[in-house]
View: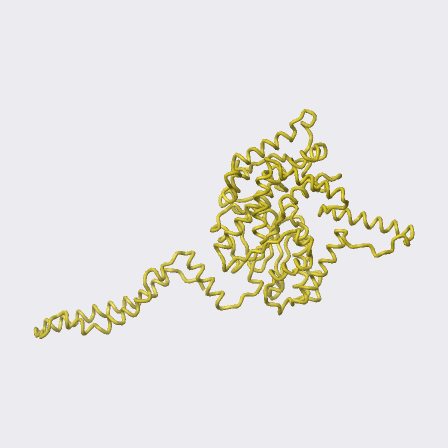
Amino acid sequence: MKVSRKCVAMVLALPIALIALQIIGHTKTTLTELSTENNISRPHHQQNEEKYAPLISRFDQLTMNNTYDAYNLPKEDWKKRKKKQDNDETELHYHDYAIFIVMYHKTGYVLSRQLKKVVSMLEIEANRPNEPNLFNANLHTNYGTDKITGERFAFDTIGGWTRSAFAPRRHSFQTHCPRGYRHEPFLLKSGQIYMQESPDLFCDVKELEKAILARRAKIIHFVRNPYDMVLSNYLYHSQEPTPEKWVHKDDPCMTWYENKETLATNVLPSIGTEEVNDKYFYNIFKMCRSLFQSKSSMWNSTFYEHLLELDPGDGLRLATAQMVAASGSANRHKAGGDIARMANNIVKLKELQSYMPSEVEVLTLSTEEFIKTTANSTTKFLDFVFGANNTIISRKKRREAAQLRKKQFEKVSGKRRDSGKGSNMSPRENAREEKRKQSLKKKASHFTQSITQEEKETKESLKKLLHSDKDLAPILKLTESLVNEALS
């Protein structure tokens, strides 16, 4: 129950007022008696001290521990005190937390949704074993409460395969916090898992604190080495045919938001250095313009056509400039600026955790880690979501789910070795096996894993170009440093 400062003050003032009235009444009676008898044998002030000593003592007891500062606290302090009292009174269930899962383009968009599905599957298996298909992964929102009793049996999940919980790469121009697709406020509630691609965390920590309506929040932040990230981005979008349509309509050099602010304006307060500043981002913009529709033969060419027709070095530089500095306004916020955005958000989440150490927990995970140690990384993710209490979702169930996730990843990424049939297979079996490999290769293209030694060498040579590029290397090195620090 919330108690206002006015109520506290009135409760404290009532006994004090009654005592004061009693003192005044006694004073009036005594003075009347003294004036009538006209027989004062001792000084007046000594008689008062002796007569009112018990009342004054009681007054002191009431006021000594209830000074003005003790109950006239700022609103923020009352809020924190109330949270501490609530947490002390009851043990937290993992549904008392809001789970906020953050990822970016080429840092685990598909992976994060598969992990969310694992969480829902474990909860439904434990609490609704007869309804295995209760959640639909394609829906934007699934509710984990019983329609009749209102009892919670699983996290609500907000954000599906095609849409995030809130609008990616967009923010309120008033608060600079993320916003909804229809300008709804950014709010995190307990018992809900939010899937969020590329949030604009440009507001200060006090605004972020207001957004956390849950008693506690757990934030899972998927990051990636920026050099691998931009290289994967370039190779992914320069495929024939390209997997995403927005590359046919994008202006990769568009750095402005609708309110005429740039992405750089919003991220530099967090990540700016002597080298990475306004002028630096302007130089990236100029470099981008020098590559995009700058030749007469390519005036009407699309971003995708540039990625195909430019030599690999220039194609990579153009794609990386888009991934560093573009706001996303030109492609309806489907991509752009995620390198600078990821660097900014690493800093912001660290500030938020320092500002709210007992309310906010942050787990930073890398896609490289999931590729190398799928089962261990999945277990780490599940332990963070479900916490130390394993009475509902046991450790055994978590490990089994992690092993299943490992097998699924190996199958999709094409890592599983052939069973050794080799040349003993029939022509029909060979054809079926070749078809299976082509299917796996197509699915694995989303991960842009190297298939041949030649491709590995090409990747390494392109990485070297990025390391020596005067326009792009500073921001990539800064982001790499922030990523490594967050993962350490």
